[in-house]
Image (cartoon, rainbow, N blue to C red; front, top):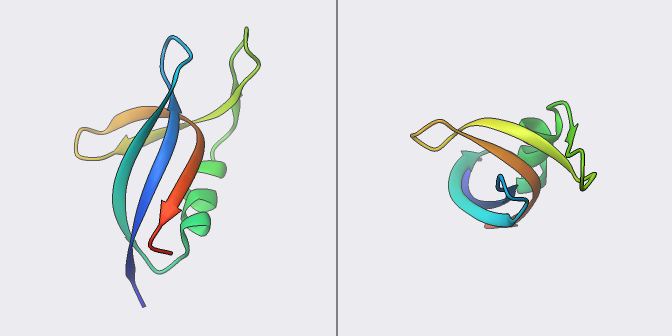
Length: 77
């Protein structure tokens, strides 16, 4: 059964600040399964100065923005 899941991705800006970007997806999976399949399956990258690990996610929303994802939160699961 498909359901609507609200996902909030925690993303890094160019200056190293963490921002939140929320959107809805229709998924048969749980939110954590969606995150593991769509984000964690990407090769991890690391910021040279801070050492923070992130994942580059392409194709968010209608603008196809690229996001540097460091974490997530879900609702509707």
